[in-house]
Length: 174
Image (tube, rainbow, N blue to C red; front, top):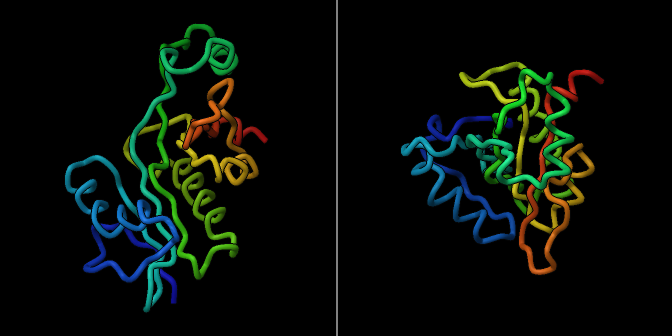
């Protein structure tokens, strides 16, 4: 039977291999440290034998200082004039990985939907307007398919990641 657990509720992490040593290493070596140091919360999908997938969330912001002017104007226009601030709260997907055995089963999409629903239910203490992610270049299309948009005008040819966002408020108005 599959279970969805927070890292602090797991006594020992079951085997996990997603094909990316950095993502494997984060779960197996760093996720508890990030939790203990109040940096990120990690959530794990597991069954009796293995870790199927995981994601970690941390606080972020979408800021005038880091977004190109044309995109900032577009985002800012979603708010009434008297509520124009220099930044708006966000939750960042710090890591998201699915084990190699389960890739192609749409588990990543299910996890992002779960994150979105958790934030829309306001299940956490803080509020946020956006979900952000520094998507690996190879995963950009995955995030676009589930509604994320670029938070930069162009992606440099040598970039490993691309900053993307999802507007939670716009999703509720559909």
